[in-house]
Length: 309
Image (cartoon, rainbow, N blue to C red; front, side, top):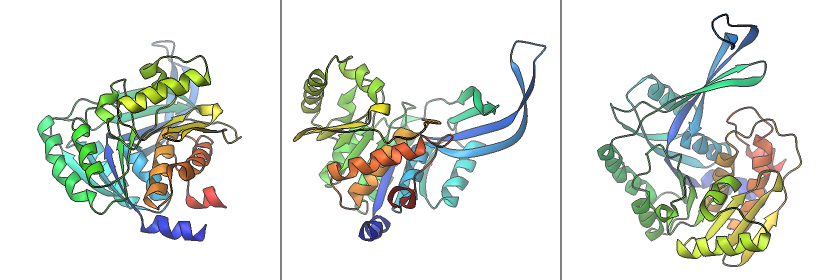
């Protein structure tokens, strides 16, 4: 595995998508508010973490590759905080600034070791700002070994079809963490990585493995997808490609928090592809990485050492 570690450190991955700031307020709950039947949280600690596409980039970086993140943010305090966190984590950020945009923030209030409420701050970016990011994307393609599109439905991937076409024309594997049921946006991708609920929203609920295989094959052919990697929570993962369907079971461990597990999976697969592995070789490693992060609180990463020692 030492050879793989060296390959990962030499690899480069490009991440494009909806970055956000995950902001946590931790506190003590000692009473109920007299104003409404809700707990009063006395905040004792604040913590900011990279979220969305930025968390995907962080997960790639944790495995060793050099990472560049292309995203659109506002001209506000969360954007500046996001930029500092990227710098501290060794991630190269290409941040398009839209003065009319609120940088996406997910504020979570935690009391008694559980999430009490989440408050989201967001709006849609300007299309002209997004179009301007295509230049950065084109300039970043040559050096990267894999491209991840992290779609959170926040509007940052308006030009994804064009970007996929450019990446595939450049011979780069393209991985997509999808959102919604319009897979025409992802046509031509190397692999898309939905979870069970996301896939059911696209192909309908399935009643058997055979029905699932048939519907995924139809989806794959319709949108010229090389493969589809289905994350199945406690049921593990399934990979559907031109060679058929391969399935592996989940890693047995206590689940503490599934937040960001999908980010870890797609990041791990991309890192392994950039290091020279095949999809079928990368799949069990990604499954192991997903099992590690669900045992941690909030958005988290799995390091090379955790995976291979």
